[in-house]
Length: 301
Image (cartoon, rainbow, N blue to C red; front, top):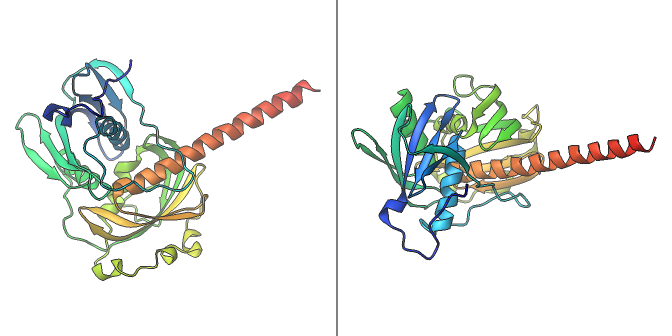
């Protein structure tokens, strides 16, 4: 079944700007549910925060609203992220855990700005970024406190990814205290767990943002601290400062030997996902080529 979207040249109605989220599961590792939008009878399933974000970004692209004010950065020579939807046979319903509507009004600073409206009491909460949106969900559903003041606990981490599927990973974080994030041997919502690291980061010295030599922020020696590389990718992330309720800094892709500055949590995570998706495709092609070569060799005996 094909999900219908609003044409670029049509008038965007106010109702088209809202997504209904039926949330069935939300904890430290998982975020699952269904997204309903516009007049589509069928919902779209998501199994991670990033998968929800990918689908919504795809709809924004089709509608032509809200427009990106900046071109989203990426690692050179990486593939465009797959925004295809996993259509469910379920029609609009309540979430097993919670039901809310998401309204994204602007896309400034390589991020989202909008509101979340909780069904039942119609309480409306504003958010200035995806990172803040996750914090609001954590506070509402898990009782976690939103950190409003910058606290410089840690500002660098290393991520090694073993497997990846639209936001769900197996892998580990290195050089991060266990109370923030840990090693995971089963799929977790990578966007959500990585946001835990960001909450405990932040540069207090605002003057650092001026005159930075970005090329020297993450050295090769620092990246060697990422002792075990992931099968699909290894990344070093350095948070330099926090503005607009999101993070800005540098990300280094170890295998691709590329380093790029990011302007938001969303942009940073999209860089990781596109690099890993490209690595995943190349890994699959290599296995397929080896299998094909092996079959040819076996047939020639």
